[in-house]
Length: 159
Ligand code: FES
Ligand code: FES
Image (cartoon, rainbow, N blue to C red; front, side, top):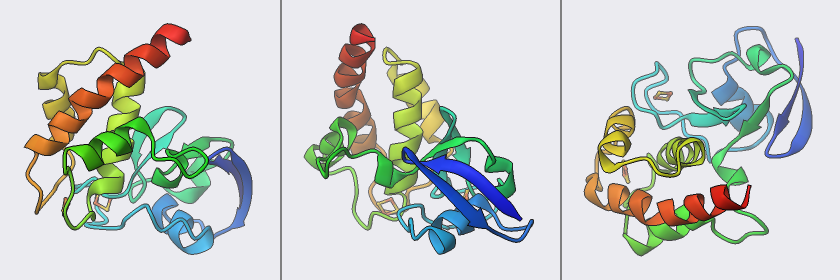
C-alpha cells in the first residue's frame, strides 16, 4: 500500500505491506534507524516516536495508520546538527550509557515537555515508567528532564 505522511518536516511517500509497522517502515524503508526496535510488543518504549504531538510506540502502530500524519523521530529533534536542549541536558547529566533506550526517552520527554513545560517530577517519573532503561538508572535521566524544562518553559512563553 502507498502511504503519504511527513517525517521530521519532510513529505514521504512509501510503499509498504499493510502489516508493516511504523517502526519497521521508519527503519527499513526510510533509513531512520534512530528509532530502536526493542521488545516489539509495546513494553520497552525504545521505539517511541511523536505522531501529531503525541508520543506513540511505533512498534504498535502500522505504517498505513500514519497516512496524513506528522511524525517526529529522534533524528528530528536536533536542528541544523545542533543538539536540542534536551539532548544537551542528557549529555550534561550523563543520562545514557549504551544509548539503546535513549531515542525513546528523548521522544517521550520531548512530547511531555512540549505539552506541559511546567510538568512536575512525579509526573516525569510516572511517564518514564513506560520506558525501560537497563543500564543507566533513572536519576540522571530525570535530572536531565528537569534541567531541560526551563528551555520548554521559555519556548512556551514565546508562543
Ligand atoms: Fe516498541 Fe518496545 S520496541 S515498545
Ligand atoms: Fe542503556 Fe538505557 S542507556 S538501556
